[in-house]
Structure formats: C-alpha cells, structure tokens
Amino acid sequence: MLESGRGPGRRKRRKWAVLLAPVVLILPCWILGPPAAAGFSGAPPSGGDAHSVYYQDKVAVLMFHHLDETFRSPVTITPRQFEDDLAMLKAKGYHVISMEQFRAWLEGKAPVPPNAVLLTFDDGYDSFRTIAVPRLKKYGMTATNFLIVSFAERPRRSAALSYLDWQAIENLYREGFDFYSHTYNMHDLVMVRGCPHPCGSALTHRLYLSDRHRMETTQAYRRRIQEDLFAAKQALEQHLSAGERRHEERFFAYPYGETNADVVAVLKELGYRWMFTTRPGLVTRTSDPVRLPRINAGAPDITAEKLEQRLRSLAGRHPALP
Image 1 (cartoon, rainbow, N blue to C red):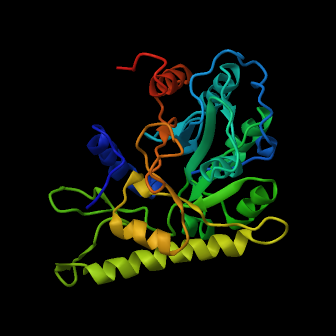
Image 2: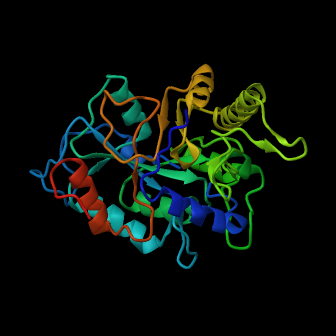
C-alpha cells in the first residue's frame, strides 16, 4: 500500500510539479558543515534566550530545496528568506545539530540540546554550494543534502537550473558537509490509475508500458527499484569514501515523501536505517525509523516568522497556524 507524505495540498503541489517538470526536470536534500559538528556544550547559541525551551529530547528536521533570487517555483525561496530563517533560529535559541549528532542521538549514544534542529536540502541544486553554504558558515551552522545522484553526472539541466557535480560534492564533503541518496534517477512523476496527469513517484508506482499495453509486473518493478537504489548507494560510496572520512549510506529521503513496503524492504536490504518523509512533526527516539517526519521550510510563503510559529505549534507551545 502506498504511503504519502503529502497533506490536503498534495494534488495542488503535484500539479505544480507537473507544470514545472520541463524546466525543473522534477525537483531534485541536506548537508553538514564543520562548525556545528562539535559537541553540544549545553549553553544556548549566541543571541538565544536561555529560558526559551520549546521542546527537549526531540529534533525538528527542516526541509529546503532550491535558493534563487529570481527563479520561481513552489520549492524555491530567495537567499534573503533563507538567511532570515537562519537568523531567526539563532536569535530564538534553536540549536542546529549535525547529522552525526542526530545519528548518535537516534542510537541512544548522546543527547541533543533543547530546541534541536537539523537542516536538510533535497535534490542537489548547485544553489546549495553558491548560496546556502556561505550563509551556513556565517551562522556557524550545518546542513545535509539528499541528492538525485544521477544529476551529478550531468548537472546542467537547463538554462535556469544547475545541480551539484561530483567535484563540487567531493569538495564540500571534504569540508565536512554530508550527502545522501534521494534515489539515483527515480524522481520522475509517472501516470497513475485515476489521475489525468503524471502524479505518482516512479519509486513507488509500477510503470505503464505503452509499447506492451500493460502495467509493469511486480517482479520487474522490484528489480527496477533495486537497481536504482543500489546504483545511488554505490556512486555515493565510491565518490565519498576517500581520505579520512568514510561515507556510510544510512539515511534516505523519499521522493515526494512517498514510500511503500517494497521500497522499505529494498532500502533495508541495502543497509539503510533511517528514511525521511515530508509529513510534518518532530522526531523523537520512538519515531518510526523508516517514516521520520520533516517540516517544510522551503516554500515561498513560509517566512521566518511563520516557520517559528510552526515549530512552536508542533512543540505544543504556540497556537496552530490557520
């Protein structure tokens, strides 16, 4: 049975994705910078309020995609908007943690600070390198990027959009940023029965074989996703396991937040332990590891003020937004 990370606005957002597909090539999540990788001291960040504890022993995982001054899409925000988000997190006493800290906490090996936040990016846009990383370093924060791995081999997708190539990914990895899989090349939307346009993830739906006038068999579907997910894992390990750091593919982000039993089974076979959806919520140690929630912070209408209200609402410390 298909599980979706979309809420009531799912159809509208998918419609946008379909309209933008020729330009965006289907919106291809997160990185880790060196300053935040140090251990937590117990003190709030500079500018924070020592008494503003909204939640403890939980982590808010924020999701971004693309940053651009002029390009418009449902998953693109301006550089100023992103910097406002970082400034808000620091001023309000949120603690941005690294993926290493997040993993240690999930495994019960170390605590996380109160108001812990994990920053993630999806798809591997080059704006992560040119816009996000300098601002993350400015605020002493870190993030992780979930890549559509095949795009690193042909990063120039259109006149308006570019993605990270392997050289950039390797350089950022050496600086301390982390990269994980968002599939090798399964981010396309495909036709689904009952939907008049492509509206289902290629990872979670069997394909319609037009030349054979039938649906893909269950066996062929499982083989296809096995090959794709293995190719992504292999490429990441090949490019990111040199030097002092050894890459381990333990985290995964589902395209469009969708999953099913076959996808989960294949990912577990490949050694993945934690998978992210797009369902909003705070992660706890008892959260389902294959359906971890994330909070969308990368839409044009989500200002820093609205993001903070959303965080407090999810923590039960603020009225819910309309």
